[in-house]
Image 1 (cartoon, rainbow, N blue to C red):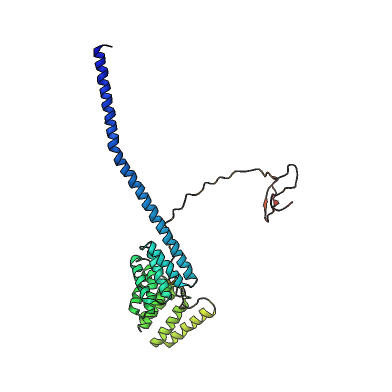
Image 2 (cartoon, rainbow, N blue to C red; image 1 turned 90 degrees about the vertical axis):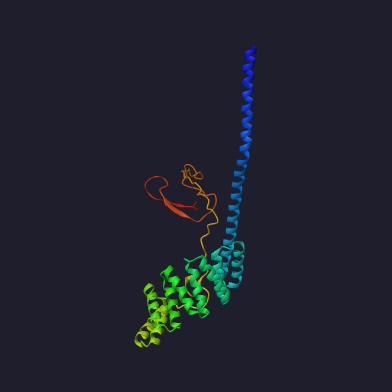
Length: 305
């Protein structure tokens, strides 16, 4: 090899070495950045999984509390709602339900505190305002109760909210407003027994005795013919929004549907050339289908021999 050729090879080898060193330097400088991105993604995934786990546990505890409320055990339900809030302090529905459980025990001050906080977090939830109105009613804070039930009627047009508006207006001796509220409720649901009775009493107190007798007769017809029932004082007996709320959980991701394929299979247990067919295990069932393809229905007995 000539000297010139050796020099050329030497230059090429030196350039190759420099390129390799440059590539190593680039990889080494890029690696920390990639590792940071990977670590950030892992941390974000772990944080999401932890948040979902907490939300799922809080939802589970809230569901158990609702179950205890449905068993008329508000003291036990209260413990589960409190535990749900320990897991997730921002779980507004659990705070709402805690207020419902406290209200069912007539612990009015803490009930109002919990329900007012829930209503602030859930301004469009009728359960929060409805139960807050009930708590104010039981504490004889009629004006605050009226304000709460007005929120209910703004959120949802249902007779129960208007009934309680009429009731509280009657307590304040504002009979014109009470009559209007009761009438609105009855226009939404004509068989609302409590609204009929409240309207009859408001009309009587206002001095309209004939109209009061008419609506009292309607109330008696509704109750005797079981078209409707008046409200009670117990949990869940003051309208559907007086119950604890069970929200839809968004904590658990629903897996994709399992793909299912159907294909025709021979009846392997049929005895070839025989009219007798045997089933491996007894079962009660029957169906009609054209077994032999003659255009006529055949009766297949699952346990038949």
